[in-house]
Image 1 (cartoon, one colour):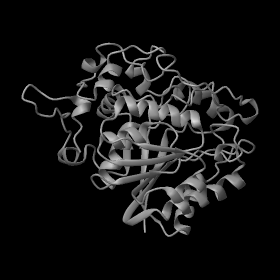
Image 2: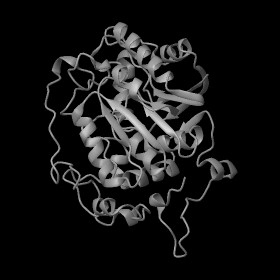
Image 3: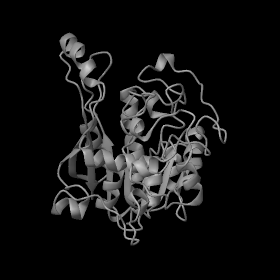
Image 4: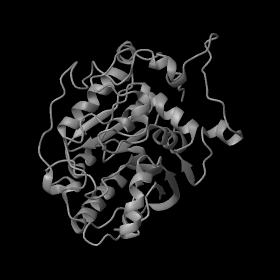
Length: 346
């Protein structure tokens, strides 16, 4: 899988590759260890390069569109994305010349080159966006996405994503030459994803379907890799749709997620793998952890997929040092800076 579109080519037409940090990194981009450190400079550089391709996963899920862990204050303010305005397909977050600054050569489609040369309505740089969404919404890490595809999917393979959400996993799959099928409940999210893919992707286009995964997965193609990041309970409320898992109480959330995992498992080809990126979250009433990671492992085991790899993704701390002092003094709660990358096989 070539990534010339990330770092460009030299004067001789050869693909520019970041300097490897050792023999393992040379073969696998990053060493395939059980701890993945997203804080390190090379990880962040690669993340900025991916974002500079024009990925705007926060579109369709801005903080004004949904509440962060507060179901009561959620208001339906989703706005249709219009071309050329407010982050539409003719706008992006990149300053002119940022492709050179981050080592990205505009060897993309003509539409993608146009996107790379403009300055978006929100005025955020790739550095700002690589550190996380300024709206407070969670954005999937494209570097992690690339690693999972390279490590666990066959070249040219099929990816199925039952909790598609933003655009990252679909666009990265397409740019790496993989076929992608994803599903999400919210039409505004699907529309935002498709508009981005139309700008960025070339011959291979990711496919997003709008609807409930329970209904849509039987129509999905058979997969070499099931790859997704499900809602972390009610930590983020994405809509007011009662079928949206993020609106459910935990005792109904997990059974619904298990049914989706079952439907997804039926689409997995022999020898294929499934990867879910999850993180535990707290019961807002008691402050205790739900045990979401363990429950996810049990859900896969119940459908015949067993835990094969468990990696810890160490994330950038951001504003956590500011918040953790009062948090720990009042409640003795540790500042959480990791997620679990769970890989399953039959």
